[in-house]
Amino acid sequence: MNFIKGFSFGYMSKRGGWKEEKAKESLRLLKERCAIDHIVLTVVAEQDKPQSTTINWKNHQDVVSDEEIIGMIEYAQSLDLTVILKPMVNVSDGTWRAHINFFDTDVPCEPKWSEWFKAYNEFILHYADIAEKTNCYMFVVGCEMVNADRREQEWRSLIDEVRKVYSGLVTYNCDKYQEDILKWWDAVDVISSSGYYPIDSWEEQLDRFEKVVKHHQKPFFFCEAGCPSWVGGDLLPNDWTLRGEPDVEVQKRWYEEMFRATSKRAWVQGYAMWDWKANLYPMERAEIDQDYAVYGKPAEKVIHDYYSSIK
Image (cartoon, rainbow, N blue to C red):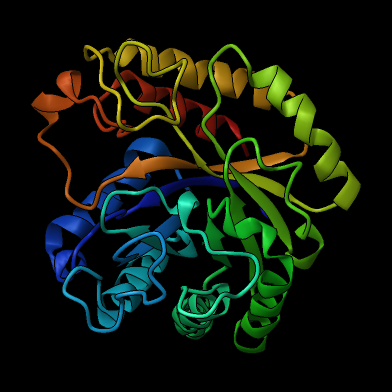
């Protein structure tokens, strides 16, 4: 696997958003300002509740169209960016996708894992087919599905089906703290996780799951990693619901520490930072923005300089 100097792009974009010229301009600026060579295109669909067994993605107004996805993949490739396609499922009521969950044993009149995985397989295989037809470098079969992670056989079966339609690298983006809990890393080509670790615990966390990566002898990268720019965000970078006073220096220091710690581990072979919007805020708002975005913030230069240093 090539070292991934990447960024996640387009999260929560709605239908029509990737057709707009400003989305392409945003991607061009991302490459220029952060020195990336890989892009993770995120395609988000939703299910109504954590126990819903239907995923609302077919021709849905809130999901970017296949035409837009193909167009953005081709545009990214025209910029000499290597594309990773990442379909994701969210829950419309605001529940985090990690809490999608069902009884382990089927019960009449209750929603079932088998029903959910049938819907999820159809969703994933559709985008795996697009990834194959557009020559995407890697495909992400799932993201931070913590309660679903224990359904080992269903994931193995899905990955087998993905490989029938997609010939590139396959990964699963596990959640933080789950790297040494997941039982089916042998089924994928690349191990990846979400690197939202407190600024003062990077060494401890890397020590913890270094053993997993070395045991499986597979490439590893952070399919997500980032920190919001508010006071306290560096200590709880995984909590997107909290908001303190804006502080772009907090975010800058977090990135500096992450690169300091991870650069010492040769097995860390890249990052897809979280995240870069298809519709950028005005530059003058950068200092007061509290989100994970780095556009116009000091962390942007930290990322640019680090990526530029890797040849």
